[in-house]
Image 1 (tube, rainbow, N blue to C red):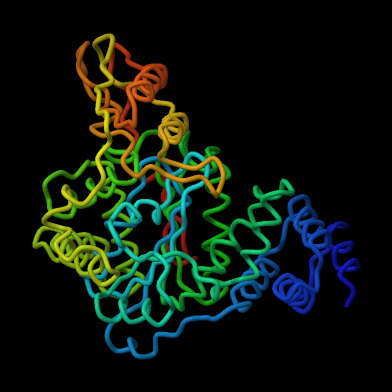
Image 2 (cartoon, rainbow, N blue to C red):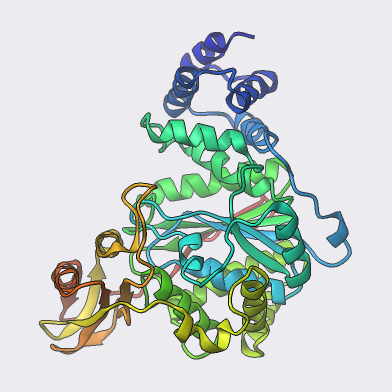
Length: 446
């Protein structure tokens, strides 16, 4: 086969065969396709799309370019499940969900990423924990999953290396926004984990990677179709990202909120609904509950009896973090040098917020990256963020700003006041879970 002929066929709108797709993914993995050819192929897909069969074959090819984990030793102990989020502002759900679902009897080998752009990364949050090992070798990763029930780490060089090369090329050639390539990139890594079930959390709204609700629905449907076609039972929830999720934005602050959530000291209602909804889907996929009501009750019980918190503590310790982190997290997590309130200048109700811009404000404080090589200050960010619909009086804090300097704090305060709108009447209540999409036998809800 000639790469240029395959590229030409896709450019002209033809569906590629499984053999042609396999040729392309092998060429991406072993370098026999040049960067220019990979870029041309990606651009052709961006403009001409892929059929479902092409998407499944392409995902399988990327997945097979590296090792695919097997969990045969866990077959009689419980299902292997995972969740992936497209990312948002204040989205610390993975830190709560992995130990929660593990405490319900599943095994969760969660491979996560770092933040880039306005959304935060799970690994950046975990890196705020002293000595936490985000990049163990595969043998240790497997051992922690077997012993604890879950482990959250970063992508290793062994998993889906073809996707790593493809993404790097897409990132500099204007082809990141292709739905089939986004879906295949996400799923090639997730399916390489050797899962029995996967739940996708696709964000929609002003703070999402794909703010257009129509594109979020398209991506969720594509992921569910591809994953089920590849043999992994998958559902997707489309969840709201028109507001900060939870009360904090910033790495160490989000870890602290996670500990408070698991310990039962404070559970933001919107955040709690997302966690329980995703846990419900995972337990149903893993046949650990027969009905949504049973799954939700089981997850709530594991939060209430401390099992989920204990599992989180064991995971941190097993990956070289402090053994008493749950009890003494405040003494381990870094604290910003300047903490100041951003106070409301008028009374009323919080009606809306520019969520993406809030994420960028935290980046400007030093809590995220503009480039992949940028360092991160784990201590900076926002806490006590007031939710949409909250009644607030003039002079009360909209949020607490954690900054490295007075100048940074004042700049963030001025920015936040422009991004949070106060009105005389409360806004209409919007559901945090907007839709549920899955296998053909799973009901869709508006």
